Length: 447
Ligand code: 5AD
Ligand code: SF4
Image: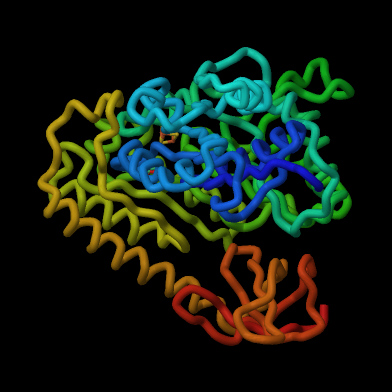
């Protein structure tokens, strides 16, 4: 596009930020911007930030500091901060780093083009409201460009759970579900553009309760996530559906049943528990205990025996004792996770737990190392057990070696296959032949 301005977006944090960055790029497309993958030739730089863990704001300030030479070389360059740090820090960013022109919270991205016009005129722009209107309505004008085979689709945002350690209820606000009709329309559009696998996103995605589409309105009321998944499964050309992230208390019977009888719903579930100690779970305000989580996993596995369970853990939560930590290790042994993320607790200002006394950082570090050793061993055992099995793989990109293609299995394992005829977007049956630390190798077999 001749004369188009260039936009560079740097994305931190979760998959929802990746999705939001795409939507921001599209919104700015309407204001005459094309995306660039280097900050050096950009007319505008947006940092899409994450606030979930330690020193998030400090990291953003130092990243901004590193951009000073860019701005000095090109005074017209506009710099914006988006995402959860923007929401949490607000106008403090403009005060502390005067080089920043624009601060926009996650619920206001549809206002970016108007904000851009303001900053072009030499003003600064700040918007960290939680407006009543749906930002996605205004972001709907997608270019009809072809897409890769996988896509994220945000269906729900925000959280009403208020776990004692978590900033999400403050940065992303109260739980809001998008109407089911809009989600279906967006999914159909993605499929028309080449997408074969959609991951539904939400901070509490299984709490989804979206307005039913017009045609089905009436006694049905809102749609649950299970109902939405079943409707998505009707879309021809959409082969795989996933969702993340879920809270144990919202794993309803209909969602568990969908794992058993909806072929397009992939056998993978990210279901964070955070701790295996009832005392710690209570202090975290998780509103469930270890036993109920284990029973829930049993019910899910009864519906879909080969499901791969993934989780999140926090160690060193204020008050966590060695006995509490032993409960966490025991829960991990009982569940057997195929994938896991584990973190040392970090106090997030403004959350209830931030007021409590910290566990000795060395003790917490030692526990994290022990937990990660166990999780890595489990992950590896589950991955190794795939050798000899037949899985479906959606190929996403060329592999590292010539003639190789790489993709994901239904269990979300990275798989590469040497087969020169394969193309991006192919969904094929593969026999797994080898397991390496972070990926599987396989060979095509006739469908
Ligand atoms: N400290 C450490 N880990 C955290 N998480 C969220 N807040 C904190 C915190 N204050 C982790 C949780 C959550 C994941 C997205 O990040 O495990 O599930
Ligand atoms: Fe944060 Fe998840 Fe708890 Fe909500 S349910 S407060 S997003 S950890």
